[in-house]
Image 1 (cartoon, helix red, strand yellow):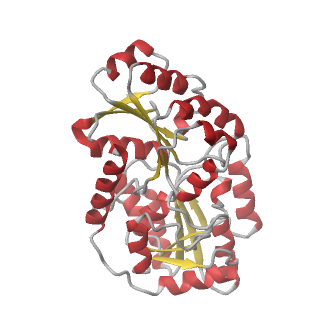
Image 2 (tube, rainbow, N blue to C red; image 1 turned 90 degrees about the vertical axis):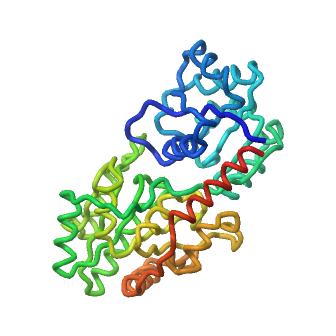
Length: 352
């Protein structure tokens, strides 16, 4: 049955991947959804809820890091008003335990739980806490946050990368936020391996560092110096415009990722990179059925746009795959049509 939704967002201007999904979700629901900035203005929330059947939370949204009580208050008010509470968990055990404590009341209020990947659903189900949460649970495929539009804008970064490529340099790329659990710095090791083998290589990170207790940025650039890549690495910082981002993507030869847990369906940055028209080298999921629910990932793998290496591949194996991928043309397909179909299936699953 179709419902009308209130989708919670933050007031942030720089969006993390989870918040970008929240806003796109509201957009794809059209007139059936409106966004609402999560805060402690309960009278304002009550007014916004009057014409809605349900609320949708997505966790973790970086812009909510300082919101300790607002999510719980909003979830409780929604339940008191007889509304459904739909909670998307894009992470669970990877969250700091204190963050999970803050989210616990919201999860307990949920009438439906949605997970970004089967791995997250399994993590949650294995906890004692899950016994007290709703049994109405689903894994929902998460689409990329950006789509290739065919338009691209030149920028300082894209111009510099284009100059490097004209000089014969192979450009490796990563898209998305830079943080330890993503193992962003592993691509630096791949670049160093290629450099040792005699290849001229550079790396561009189209994204920004996630600030936290860890010295993420300092450790990253220490690795750059230790690996002898000081004049070969570009970090763009947050890019707000899709056309500027497309211009940077166009100067990447191969995107490269190596995740501790292997590829999972919640890696929207991998999808966005693959849809840019460049190959992506990434290590395979831990289980062969991990992506079965996500048709777009399966399609990109079938066409070798996403080239899988073994889950436990070492740096030398990844470097070899990067060189091979850089020499092969991409098989074209209708990305917009595939993503539209994905959004249609997401809407149907949420309505269930």
